[in-house]
Length: 313
Image 1 (cartoon, one colour):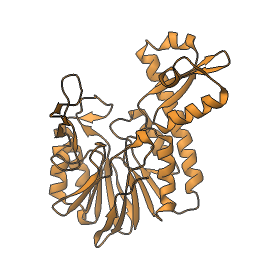
Image 2 (cartoon, helix red, strand yellow):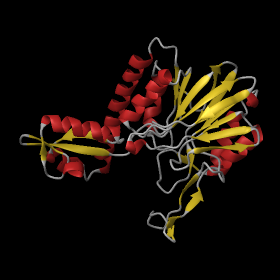
Image 3 (cartoon, rainbow, N blue to C red):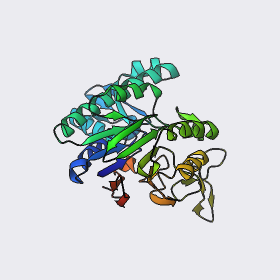
Image 4 (cartoon, rainbow, N blue to C red):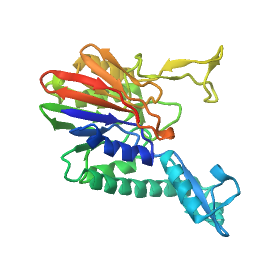
């Protein structure tokens, strides 16, 4: 069975389309999206005489209809949400966190609905199976949209048979981060939940543990060390890196030794490591540049992971 795995596309329109196209391009049987599906910010596209202003990208210049459409495409490809509005609406809601959250959630939902429609168009009749879950950065309200979809199988906190004798368990929460994202847990609680999930697996040697956060103290969990103002620590002109993965994830992988661990969360730590008999992979993320990072794997229920590579494009 050939699997294409990607994660942390963070609302990038072009990365979503590339992900869907990867099924046919790589002749994959299965597509797996490992969390952090949604974007991080709304960009106001403000009505003006003769067009629109997008101050974050074009200052006070008024863009024509064609220029506005091109700008909105650029914004979506970078993982942001263009939001057409007026100066009056901005004055009314932009200093109200609850109102801003409602707008943010609304555009997330609209985008995800459109993405699911695109997936149905691209994958219908191909036989390619699509699995996805939300990550630590995704609002909890969006999990239901994935679970209710008929074009994909939402995977979180479930044991699934994905074919060829291979099972998969998935979990999208992370350990604590400096960013206070929507779905974080203390590491002990994260481990407890992962242990409960992993205990359902009868044959770990034939299983995939799809855990959004990578195992701690490995080459796939390194991120810049941050100071008190959340700026990278630089010494001797070099950004200092530190382990930010989960000790709980590491312990669960070491106890059960599944054939494969699929991870993400730490964009800078693209790579693969061995923990006992487990191959643990983090394809990384370059969504802001419109680059899709993925892992292409040949998996056999009896012989495990036969081959893997980490393509980008």
